[in-house]
Amino acid sequence: MAGVIQMTVRRSSRPSPPARLRDRSPALAASLLGGALAAGLGLASLTVLVMVLWISSPYPDSGPGGALHVAAALWLLAHGTELIRTDTLSGVPAPLGVPPLLLPALPVWLLHRAARDAADGYPRLPDGGGPPLVSARTAWAGVVLGYLAVAAPAALYAADGPLRPSWPWTAACLPLVATGAAGAGVWTAYGRPGAPLVRALGAIVPRRGLRHLLLGPDARPGVATRAAAHGLAVLLGGGTLLLAASLAWHGGALWDAFPQLSQGWSGRCAVLLLCAALLPNAAVWATAYALGPGFALGAGHLVTPLGSAPEPLLPPFPLLAAVPQPGAGTPLTWAAGAVPLAAGVLVGRVAGRAAAQAAGGGGEWSWRRTAGATVLAAGLCAAALAGLAALAGGPLGVAALARFGPVWWQVGSATLAWLGAVAVPTALAVRVRHGAGPRAPWARIGAPRDEDEAAPAGTAGRVRSWLSRNKDTERTTDTGPTMDTEWAMDTDWAMDWAMDTGWTKDTDWAVDTGGTKDTATTRDTESTKDTASTKDTASTKDTASTKDAGQTNDTGTTNDPGTTNDPGTPPSPAPGQSRAQAP
Image 1 (tube, helix red, strand yellow):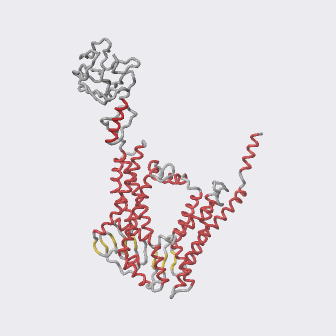
Image 2: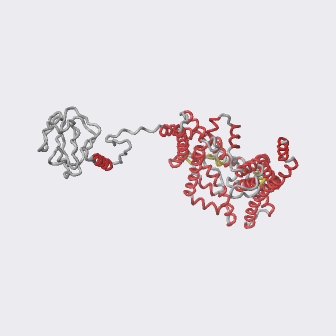
Image 3: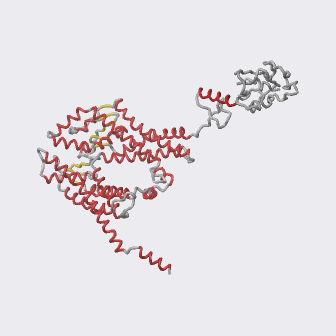
């Protein structure tokens, strides 16, 4: 009966297909609405901007319908779609394929947020509780379908305007951007788990060792990925610095370009906004310039550090003022090579330190594995920069304007060559430097005798330590002086105990031939003098006159039968008797 009840409970816990469909329908509807809303907000933002510029323009070329067509075309351009300009002087359609890299930030952010909110379903509680998350597939599919449902009519509407979208580019770029941004949003809503990344990478890269260089076992970026990210950041940052320095150097030509393009403030604002949207493109162009291949300002007009060809007749666009003057290169232009050099050093340093840490932890990082990880990092950085170069450039027309910007495969090859030549030796050198085990400390002369006693650093500390040891070893009880543990002697020796004059404190006995460890006699509590007497080991002389006791012979025995034959232990006084009165 218990088994029957258990089976009944299990069967009732699984909802039927109509019930699952009813539970999924609200989530799917919310996801569709979120995707459509994201597309509408992006399109409306660009429409408002274009309409404001059109209204403020003193000489509008077309009516509000033309402005709306331009807004829809710009929204498609933000997704990477190539546009075709039909109203040319020659009548030949001219492609417009240089998308501003800052423009896609708005649609990508809207898609990411819509997918994240669709997967959350409801706001989370502070302790992480609340309703369960919506299915990842449901949220992702709903947002993508809702977004494309608005993008398709917008593309059809823009096809009747002066800037028509290229249908092959539209069919490829719009779904790619929508699926990628929505997937990132759903992944963020689920807390960025690493298991999907590990599974996806495992399907692409079957080798475990190579896969761990890209993505660690804990789903964190691997050594090669981290090194490639550092190198890419240095390259792009260096290109941005080059661009800023060139714009500051040609500041006069930069400001003179604005009034030449437009007379009204609305036109100048439009040019300024276009320059701001194209700043990431210019940074990638400057990075390609530092790497060596440079960029093209039309077909057959290259700009490189080694020399720049005469540029074609171009409009006075402000960002073009930063282009170096035509002619052979100078040491100032050759100095741009410091950017990839610094990137290669950083990539090698990251890879080399990772290899040294792995070796210190018991891992096996040979020089081949270190070099392989560095080359892999250089390849990843080259692939990323080649992709950015492909997005940052494109055609602006036909004939002489068919090519603007860097060539992606040349940029990728130059990045791989620079980083491979600089990063690999750097990584091996860092591995050798940081991979050696800790050195054994050298034995110091005059170290403390006690193993648990640490000598202070510096000369003053060593002096204080020596004085402290002497003070501790000179304390005794009434039974006799405390002697050190070892006496090194080559010949017989003897000591004269001063009976009448009293024991002296701080009396150091130095043996010339044997050398003892801080051998010192201890002071008596009734002694009053600080006299140190040094005895020779071969023959001793009587330094104090004795009244009652006999003389000490060379063998260490005394004639007085009351003394002891032990040369190292003085006679013990009787109770109530001082050492000077001892027999």
